[in-house]
Length: 129
Image 1: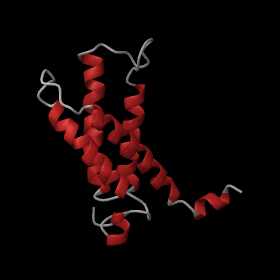
Image 2: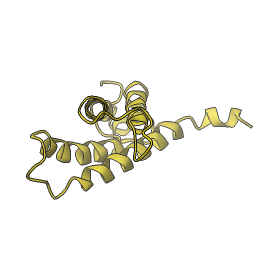
Image 3: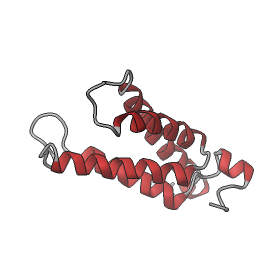
């Protein structure tokens, strides 16, 4: 039964892309409207997250979008550890374990590519990235 999964291996990158896109689109849109007291980089992230999410969703320039979103997640983990002093799994709220899982998903997409159900595959861009 599990051997049938390998015949449909293109579903894996699609499911991963959909989950990553949903998370970044939701969290990116939460940053709107922009808080005037937010750090200087928040407007950049508020734009980059939804754009990256849409690119990942469509499978367009997927490896580059995943790289950009991975960099954002490294920054989020760094901020939680250094500026906020949050542990891996905080007692209240969220630690940085969620961020680490999203980072791992972005890195996986960088290595796997978009898969066959993507704009990259349809245009032949995935092999050129």
